[in-house]
Every structure is written in C-alpha cells, then in structure tokens.
Amino acid sequence: MNEPLISIIMPAYNAEKYIKRAIESMLNQTHKNIELLIADDASQDETKKIVDSYTNIRIKTYHNNKNLGYLKTCNILFNKAKGDYIAFQDADDYSDTRRFEIQLKAFANDPELGACGTNFISLNEKGDEFLKSDFPSNHIEIRANIINGNFCIIPNAFLIKKEVLKNIGGYNEFFNRIGAEDYYWTWLIMEKYKLINIKQNLYFYQYQQNSITGNWSDNFRKFFSRDLVMFLIKQRIKFNFDGLSDSELAKEFNKFIEIKEKPFKEDKSYLYRKLSIKDFYSDRKKRAVQYAFKAFKINPFKIENLKNLIYFLRK
Image 1 (cartoon, one colour):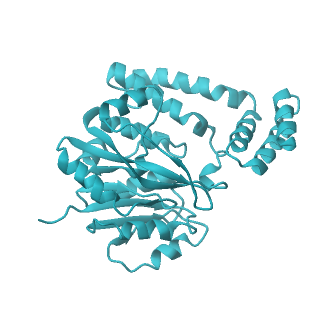
Image 2 (cartoon, rainbow, N blue to C red):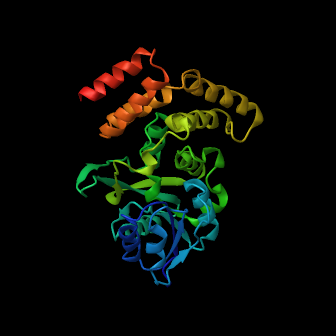
Image 3 (spheres, rainbow, N blue to C red):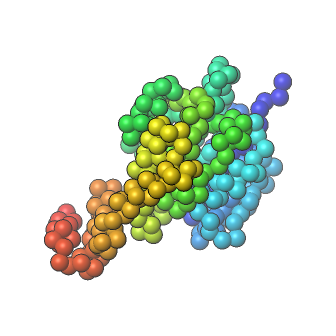
C-alpha cells in the first residue's frame, strides 16, 4: 500500500539564517512521501539562493517576483498542493523528524479526524530551549479554550486532510498583513471537523529578537488582530455567520474595528508607545528606547510618553 503524499507549505522571507535547517527537517522526515512547496517572497537576503541550491526532486519552488506577504503566499501554495494531506513548516522553524509519522498515526486511529496539531518548543537565538507548550489534546477542550481567548494551538504544526482545505478554502484576505489569519481559519475548520493536538513537542519555534515579523509599525491592526478573530468567532457561535460573510453582521464588526482603531488614530504617538512597551517586555530594549523616543517626539505633551522614555532609559 502506498504511503499518503504530504504537501508541505513553506513561505520564506529573509530566512537565510534558518531555512536550511527547516528544509532538512522536512527532507529527513521518517515519512518519506512528501512534496515540499517553497516560495521565496522576494527576500532581501540569500534565502532564494539557498533554496535554489537544492536539487532534491521532492522540492518544488514557486518564488514570488515581488513581496506578497505570508497570507497570499500561503494561498498560492495551497493551490499548488497535490497531497492527500497538507502540512506547514515556517522557514525559520523546524520539526522533529518523526512529526509526520506520529501525526499520520493519529489520523489512522481516528477516521473522524480532520486536522492534527502538536505541542511546540521555543528556542532562543542561541538555540537553547526556553519554553515548552502543554496544549489540551482533545477537540472539546481546544474549542473551549479558544472561546475563552486562549489560542491553545500552533497552526504551523498542523497536518490536515486535503478535503478540509477543499471545503474550507485558504486564508481569508481580510487578515492580509495583520496576522491571525490562521486562528480564524482554525475556527472554520473546527466548526466542521475534529481537531486534536499531539501531546509530544514535535515543532520547534525559533524566537528572533530582531525578527522582521517583530516589526509591527506598518499596520496597527496587528495589535488587535486576535481580538478581531474573537469577535468573529462569537458572531459565528451566535449566528452561524460573521462580519466577513454577512453584510448585516459586517456593520457590527466594522463598529468594533472603529473602536479598536480609535486610540491609534486620535494620538499618532500611541502606536509607538505600544511598540516600545511590546519590545521592552520582549527583551528588545534598544528598539524599545527608539520607539519610546519617537513617541515622545511625536507628542511630547503626553505624560505617558515621557514616563516610558525615562523608565526604559534607566533600565
């Protein structure tokens, strides 16, 4: 009996430091029947060159001529996937070589299963482990946690049946460039299919202190994208539709967006004050000071800006 084909989605942007490790973790999986779909998203470093240096026939490349962002790149790769199952692997991260073998066993043991995640391990920039997740494993617990705002999943580690992608579709482009598209997508999956988490920590998330993804200054909706997902989820629980699929519910959703955007629009320094706080508590203290100074420069009469700047400078 032939092993099922797994299509692995790997968008890549400025990942030259880690992408070889990510690729090797896929090529070295104990489950060998894979196709690795990689799209370099117009990187400004050597990412594309590293990808193109591989001659393994299981790697298929679909590079972008211009930067489209993570969401649109994933949707392009979704349409290229030919596998019985779809998996994800971020170009900065890597997976245990037994990941697909273990996930496929979960599908074999449960015909009702539509999607299977795993727990993860976070690595610092030195490669040391500093956090291990302990997600609930069964569908009911996962659903209850998400409803309470606890996104106890890591979609990057998902393995899903191809039929799930066909029925649910790709990421909703409302979330383009703001993030949380995978959490909204996960909820759509859970409405129709069973989802579980494997207890083992089979996915390795690479924390990067100065990551491009850590720069939130280009779109302030990134700060509350998860709140937007939660609002849509609550609409779907109540009405079976949401503000992205129903014109009447869209009015309520747009009002919520206006409320969340209001402080950013009323005070131009608010964004940089938020960025400074976020970076400071993410141990990006140098950049926190830079953002705090920018907030103070924009609005020196806002007492919070002065307090933040003085506090961060002292620390």
